[in-house]
Length: 209
Picture 1 (cartoon, rainbow, N blue to C red):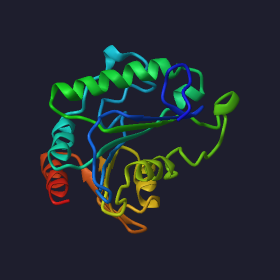
Picture 2: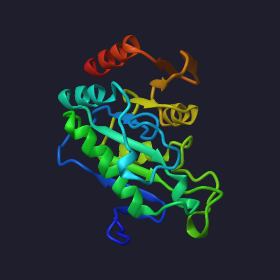
Picture 3: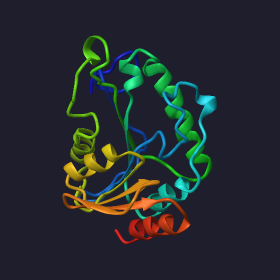
Picture 4: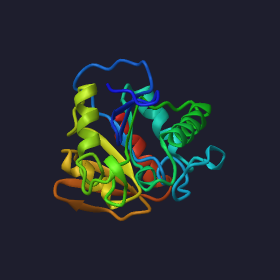
């Protein structure tokens, strides 16, 4: 993997970091999660680690995946980098803070992928509809390749329709949309994540994998 300024960049606009040293047998499903608005409270274009706070109920979801040997993979669009609002250094600090907050609640991530490509960017990051940027499935497919995942059985949680579309296009069959509505879209069964009942359904799904 190419390194740039000490960061795990597979290419100028793609961060791929293996966070944990846990090993998984090939063919395991994964729990994919968006980050901003799904794991942490969305602050717009997050560049301040001290402003990070976890959304209620998300740490137990990740902890359940950890306990059942399910790889936890964060897939996040970061157009703020392409737009020049902050750099990979700020992303690293914010992401580290989010992971630390999760660890304080006994919840651990195994891999983080972040895409900084955007049509409003500059230089090499100025790419419209990059295959790694959600709703394209590239980040999920890349994680699947690196970890040997069973994508069809994997789950995705996000706060935007683009997260659900990326999951559907990667071959997943189930997703949970924060504050969303239940629906089925091109083979993806999409459930809402609004309250404790919805959270319980997601925990049950994780434990049944």
